[in-house]
Length: 424
Image (cartoon, rainbow, N blue to C red):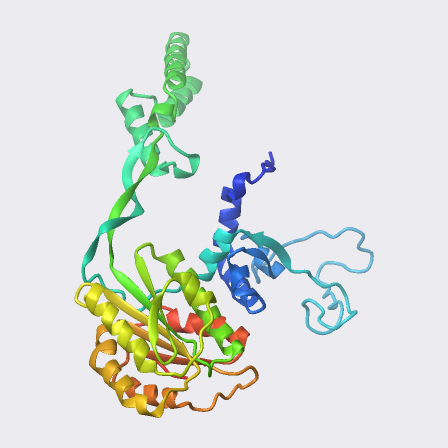
């Protein structure tokens, strides 16, 4: 019997078959998701969309005859060969799918649509805040599913086969259900017994045992058990992310766009993966201010550039609200690398004296003009590079194209050993 599931997908929820497919083809789907993000706008990432994977990835596991061995096979319509003849190889060259245009048939990719939830889960699956330690546990808890024994009702997917069979065996033993070996032995004795009275007695005994077997089934509904899960509250670590963005006049519209795309992606990542991470937005020109999300992303500003003003504001906020002994502190800074020459010593002093010692991780993203792949060394990059050798929590990257945002973001926030930094 073949069952085809034609039920609609209610309210955008994935049915079990869809989730089973995503788990089986997860590696291929994740690669397709990452490749598709290169041509997307950041806002489009939140909406899911269509992706494609090779049809080779759709093959179901199956048993087949391996190479070698001896086997006989009969072919119809043979008029030329007899047993023992060697058949000539058909065709020329190596097998496989033709790759040249117009030669043979080609295979299309398998295309399907991911929901917003599925797309974000796959895209953010292997990202994490580096070196997240539970310095102090928050009062609020996060919920996670945990095993909570067994129940007599539940979903067929959660049926505990081992426990069910064990209970069924115990019930059959307690009720003295006849074993199949015992019935087979009595039937063998009946076939060999010459005495009519003995045969009649054996027949009655066999009939009684068979009737008892029917009354005591092999598996009874009372034997079936299902694995039960409950939401278990688990304490989570306190963490705060500081977003420092340069909005001075030296930042062109293209540079600001790159920085905003990076921070949008960071915002999606934090709000999606962590329930209890606070985000502090700081933007600066020659003076800095803490702002809300709307102002940070959309309001215009102009002026000179003093990086120390943003670091000083971050220091004040940390001192007032986020004790480094209790909080995991992270920072992500985006700038074009320009800074007043007189501000260098103040910037170094703040980084070495307070910011980097207090941070679990500090990511610096330098943005450049479109097409400037080399991105010449800026004054701020040179300054940070000197500090990075003694502070491995500092990581540095450069971007000049929109397509580079996703790879750089993944590189900055992929899981890594504690206090591991790198520069590009």
